[in-house]
Amino acid sequence: MEIPLKKSLITGAIVAASVWALGAAPRQRVADDPAIPPRVPAVFPSTWRFPARARATFAPHAMVASDSRIASEVGAEVMKQGGNAVDAAVATGFALAVAFPEAGNLGGGGYMVIRMADGRVAALDYREVAPLAATRDMYVGANGKLTGESVIGPKASGVPGAVAGMLEAHRRFGTLPIAKVLAPAIRLAADGFTVDSAFNRSLSSAKYRIANFSGRPLFFADDSAPAIGSRFAQPALARTLQLIVDSGAVGFYRGSIADSIAAEMQRTGGLITKEDLARYRPMWREPIRSRYRGYSFICMPPSSSGGTTVTEILNILEAYAPPAPFGSADEIHAVASASQRAFIDRNSKLGDPAFVKVPAELTSK
Image (spheres, helix red, strand yellow):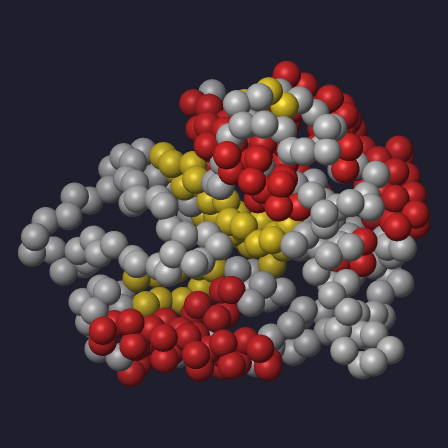
């Protein structure tokens, strides 16, 4: 069984892309099976920016899930060609950089939690890091208040880890040649793809936030986002992806691509330099391993806050909250209360393990 999960963080948005490859058909739910809760649809306020539109989907052998149908189809096709789930995750990640960059792009970073069929598990940290010139108070204005530069603008960008991280995951666990894994993304960038409403809406919402960046005309040739139903190609991105295939991470973190990134940062007042790019390295970490009501699970350790927080929530629920029907008031109250306490710890005790000692009791039973 192979169960990689990749969570990719991009500047200004957090989006998840997951890939599962299951070696056996899922167990069918029967009415008296207490281990599988009944399906209760979640109800979200219509005012949420990302209202729930998807339905639960099940597959007997493999599944690829991302925020883009096009990118997910790329991952599925890679598995059909003989690739494993890591090949599919990497292919999906690079395809997102073409077809839906809000959900994953070459300028971002992320985490990957992997379980291979032979039982090996691993956690890869390829989050962005602060540039060397970053300071503690760089987002604080003269009036002592936050300026907003941590959210929008060149200073909001960390040194990107996506390219190095996905290539490292493929190096260690992939089975197909990297050229074959990236071929679909290169083809999408070179030949173009049909713009859907999500891509159009994503670009339109970013129009004024990227007004001062030199790459803006690539997406707004006529001062508007590509129309729904039109074909959108990115030949320059195709060349960048091909350079990554030909030269590996060096092709992105050194040379002409690094020169372009550093020059744009200098022009717009950003902090990332060629030295920052050349120094970047992804890190393999030991996954968090725990159990919940008889089930074993693994998740991402710090620098991610997610794995520690989820583990603490489950430990609280197991210790203090008896099982309740899914979606019931008792279940929602228990999860909300446990989450509230875990997030207090998250906000006060977690951080980059290179600088912060995370208390071990947060994930202990």
